[in-house]
Image 1 (cartoon, rainbow, N blue to C red):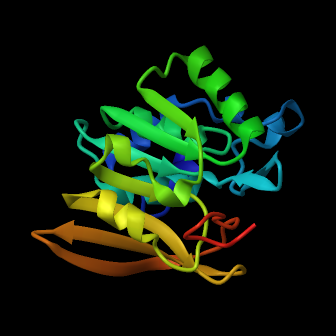
Image 2: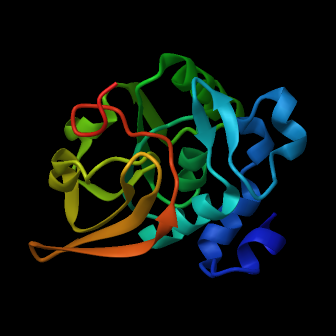
Amino acid sequence: MVREQLLSRDITDERTITAMSEVPRHCFVDDAMMARSYGDYPLPIGAGQTISQPYIVAYMTQALKLKGDETVLEIGTGSGYQAAVLSRLCQKVYTVERMNSLLAGARKIFDHLRYYNIRSKLDDGTLGWPDHGPFDAIIVTAGGPDIPEPLIAQLADPGRLVMPTGDQDVQELKLLTKKEGQVEIEVLTRVRFVDLVGEYGWRS
């Protein structure tokens, strides 16, 4: 997976590559999908949600430029794979999921793999997790119409936020950088994600 899907493309950050090598992706998919867990595509994880393809997980992770001492907020826990990768690269991960069935499954995997620097809660992710902000980096693993204002407010200065925005079919993956009170947004690539549902996303 790492050699064919990441190193052959534009994933060059050594820490990201190491994390992707260490986290057992097959633990985050259903048994029926295990044989396909390292393929170059997203996979269903139930409740209409997916685990992103390995390349996209690495690409979004690399964009955060984590050094190791950060506190990171993830919106959309899903199966827990993205949070697990982040947990190898920063001090603490806070992850928010709106579906209890997915969150319960992810928590079991975190415990099984002893990823003890991940904290999670069931809530509307578009509101962030203000009690533990500001966050050095924020990653949103679902597509919304715009970057939610609460997330921008909870991003530290300096800080980096990566999220797909657009319509419900195709989105642009955007990198928002906050520095010295200024916010800049860069479009990285075109992607397709499941809907970000919540007060500042698409309404359920």
